[in-house]
Image (cartoon, rainbow, N blue to C red; front, side, top):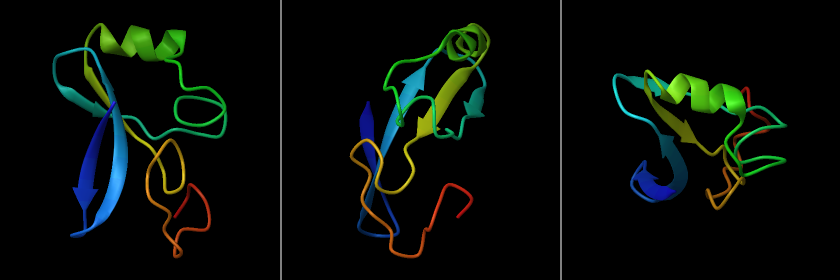
Length: 74
């Protein structure tokens, strides 16, 4: 896990796994950064071919809150 600062001040927690071309993975309510902090089998399978980059949404896993974000779709 690492932390990235965006928009000048807001911190976003990143999880990364694997190597190769980057693949951005946005979590849902039941996987990494949410109900479980562990990589799931499908994440590990993707990481065999890609560098999986998974930012935690606002308010999840140490990422700063964002009052304008009402849910993952925001």
